[in-house]
Amino acid sequence: EICQLPTQERMEKNNLIKHEGSSKMGYPEETISRSKNIIDGWRLSKIVWNGGFVDFIGANRNDILYYNYSDRNIDKNQSKPKYLKSIVVSNKLGEKTKYYNFNFDYMNKDSIGKYGYIYKRLMLKSIKDSLDPKIHYDMCYFNQYSFPAKNSHNTDLYGFYNGVEQSSLYCCPVDYNGKHYDGGNKNGYLDYMKTGTLSSLRYPTGIKENFDYSALLSGYSTVFHNKSIVI
Image 1 (tube, rainbow, N blue to C red):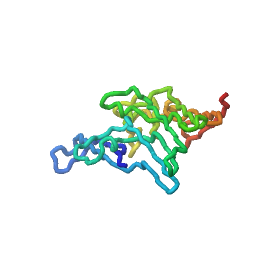
Image 2 (image 1 turned 90 degrees about the horizontal axis):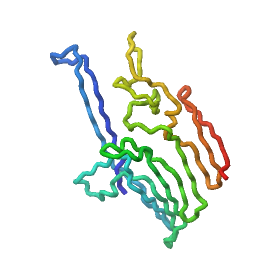
Image 3 (image 1 turned 135 degrees about the vertical axis):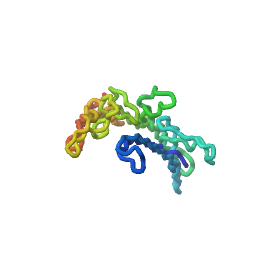
Image 4 (image 1 turned 90 degrees about the vertical axis):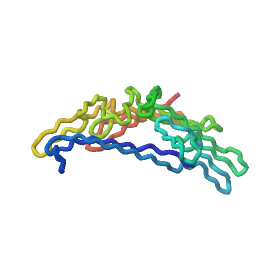
């Protein structure tokens, strides 16, 4: 089925020092350009073979903005961005043999209003088999701090959230051609960096695996695993 994919939005502000053909030669001139790409894509909804079929059931997302066009000759509900809610496996008689439910929640789920979607992040909380209660996985995440908006500039050099409220000088400081240009605080802070990452995973066997992380070193991250038995 057709569904809308995440919209790609872009805005650039530039200060032109030279503007040929204008009387403003040598004076800064601010220019702003905006672009937006709205893309439809195909979402797999069903697989059929001679032994049965598999249904991939989706549900509407509210962390992605949906653009509704009156001239789009498709089902408006189907075209909304979706996440995978369930996978149902059936035999050729239509009898369900597996029924997996994917339970999601949102970080910053209380964000509402016109721009609430910018703050929300979809996260997988559990996977359960409705036909076999023993089969379930549970996930937890680091959530000591709230995520900023998706287009926030409060990030470190690698793009991770760093908890710093950046000013208009949010770019990286740089030295160029013998001159220093100021910028924002692009240092990484591990507690903020871990926001939204997986902190633990519990398996159907009762084993719980805890995850902790280190800051980036030479462009790579190190993950430490700690396992504990859940009684």
